[in-house]
Length: 573
Image (cartoon, rainbow, N blue to C red; front, side):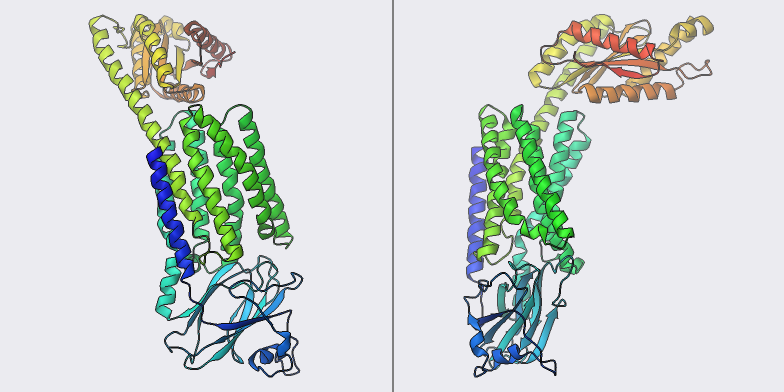
């Protein structure tokens, strides 16, 4: 773990330095930035006086324009939804004729001198906003100086007048920069996909209920994180040019991802800490609900509540980290591994949010995507633990095969059904209980009884009764794997010892066995299908074998008394 943490911290350091250096090299080729808050009136001919005052330095309205320190956002009052920006483009190489920049929830027009060269949106309210969008604009006649003027509208004053990643260069280099800005997404999205496939495969092959639930939460987190990476990448425009949709979806995921992450924490913690983690998760869900209501009411709730979300995350994540640290120090390897993403991902998210606010780094969300590397540490530990558990099960199974060979020599096999007999069960169950407790894996017991078996003997004779027992045992064996062993308990009663299955999964196995018996031709001479009743019980911490035998017997008795051909499970009292 120490080596993993050291390697991971080194990677993050290099990524951070790359992002910062990349932002420092961004070129801006405009001079003398000015702004004017509000919207220009129009003349009788439809012209904008503010546009001409920006172009003509001797205009009487020139004094109304105010200087500001680009690329920072102009110091607006926050009361207006309109602003005009103006800057001078010096003469340059004619090939450097492509303007690139990014806007968030803004509609605008761009003039080069007095000629409009680009428009995005309608400069009016739009129910779902205008989203996060990059823009390529061809600039004609770079051989001489020009005045570039922006007329901008936004429902969100905090976004109004902000032009991110602003630069002028050749078309080829601008496209390379666009792809470069997506590097963190292009690198990490396949990693998310690979982890997602691995976790789905492990979940489908996992029979223990508790582990399956944890895997479900991890799959949900990876799916949400992968969707977020995709939504905030530049490539979405090439797939479906609906930036408002992608932006809205990405903001929703910002609320959803920490809620799912807290659900994983809740699953790993115990006692009162798990209850507190659940309340924190409810807080994230509440913030999402409030933001969606505000968004539906056209109040830009998803954007406006983001500062509240980040503040809530800072406060609650400190508690989460402390709880994981305590559990990890007490020996919980999962909690210790989850500490890595619990610290790294929120820190990267806060750095990215701050960089957007204060223009620290030019590329938007350039670091948070690398948080998946931290989560991969946690996933890899789970997979390693699962491999070790499977190896223990295989060792137990191999040991059991040796015992089967010895049992044949010692006449511990029932001669009729070829199952282990009751004597062998009494010996094996003691070893199985000790092994399951040492390995930390569940152990369960199924007790099966052929319904109305005495009537089969009385009606068709004992030879048919014996054939029915043989067919029943063969049917059950076909539906068991090497972790489950069949024993003949006596008469028409059988036991199945289930290694690695808890009460829920062993109950599901009992149901599948009951259905298999009912669907098979157990007694060919009998027109109606032969059925069976099944009782289920599991060992718990400190559970005596006699208690489990009593519970499984009571469960079988209940199944027979309530109509037969059914499965009844009895948990710990």
